[in-house]
Length: 154
Image (cartoon, rainbow, N blue to C red; front, side):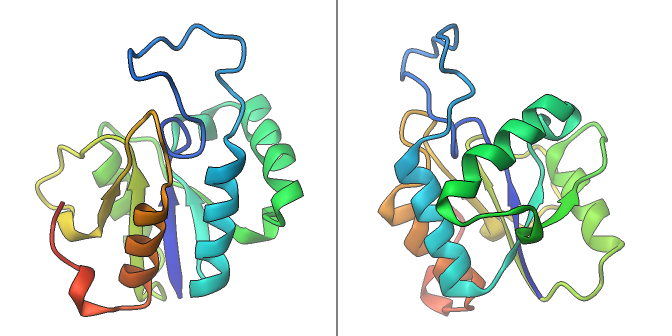
């Protein structure tokens, strides 16, 4: 099984480069980012695990599913969410420890992890102002499909 550990802010929900997160549309997902996420799912056959802080709020999860539905991404594409610990990389590792059938995975996030145990080559970083770009999409597909040329740390 292949899994993407999915952050939302800075990945699907993009923000101004100045860090101004006070706009009314802060929780609106980018159409181009959602379309690219669907293309990753289709190209790899992977599932999603929510690692974003959005997982902690029922209204945010409902909003997420509603906004992803028009792109063909449904609840069936999600396996759940990571546990709440002190660090995102450790949350992902804890989830993986309980799901031994996962063969390949990536974390799609806009912030680096502090965990020294998390394999850095499995973290695909986005820019908060652009989210999932074509280059990010290509890297995700390459890593999930085990194409060796794209496995270095970034």
